[in-house]
Length: 42
Image (cartoon, rainbow, N blue to C red; front, side, top):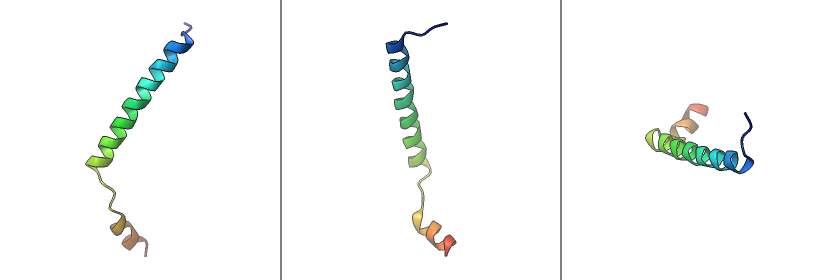
């Protein structure tokens, strides 16, 4: 099955933006505490 080039591009862009939104949501849900990271490294 061959996809039309513009169609696949549109589809991947949509997926990409969705992915980024999900990533941002996850980051907000689980914030990275840099101070505690530094302490654990020292």
